Image 1 (cartoon, rainbow, N blue to C red):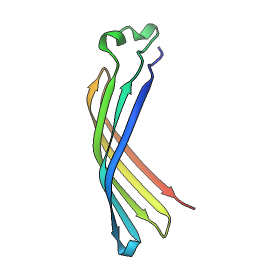
Image 2 (image 1 turned 180 degrees about the vertical axis):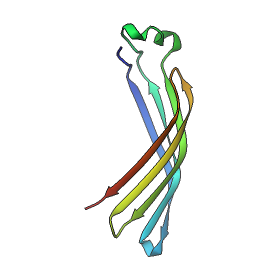
Image 3 (image 1 turned 30 degrees about the vertical axis):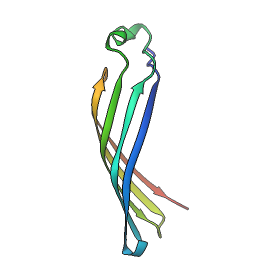
Image 4 (image 1 turned 90 degrees about the vertical axis):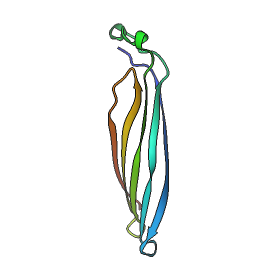
Length: 102
């Protein structure tokens, strides 16, 4: 089976709160994505796909970030529950990230 091509559109909007005279930054916001299948699945195992149509799903949830500018460290957590799924399963996407600048 060859899965059809998808496009994913990510977005986020938020506010940065400065604390400790700029030594700590907190980011609070809302993040999400929309994912759409552009082409049909193909192959012997894709018999059901044309009947169900192309898949799509949406997600929306909170984003929290923490930045320590003096240490050049940043952390981020997103929790994105999916909704509006069509021709696919849905769930929750959890993103945890950290970075160190040099």
